[in-house]
Length: 95
Image 1 (cartoon, helix red, strand yellow):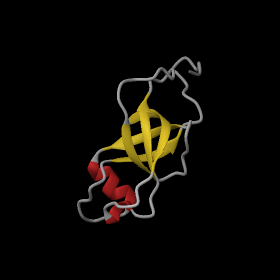
Image 2 (cartoon, rainbow, N blue to C red):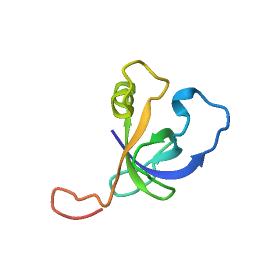
Image 3 (cartoon, rainbow, N blue to C red):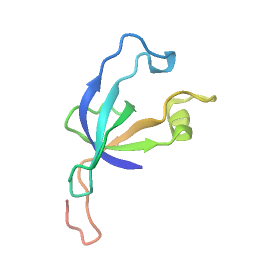
Image 4 (cartoon, rainbow, N blue to C red):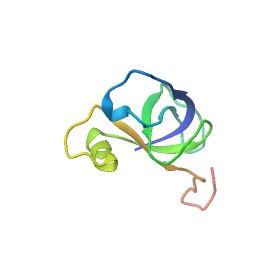
């Protein structure tokens, strides 16, 4: 699972059928303290996330299949499964 920040929306008029009627977002990994990491992930949104939101991303194809309700392999690896309100460390301090 990856913690990340939504940085953009992907707009595509031609795409595989499993992406139709789905929002595709670009997510940049971040540390629990919010420090940006390297690279970016393209993920299907399942929770109504938007630009600037901190999100949880499941980046494993089997998880995508189960979350999206498919019983066969699909060309989707990463799905946004949660919008993070805050990160609380073991000491109770928020990041």
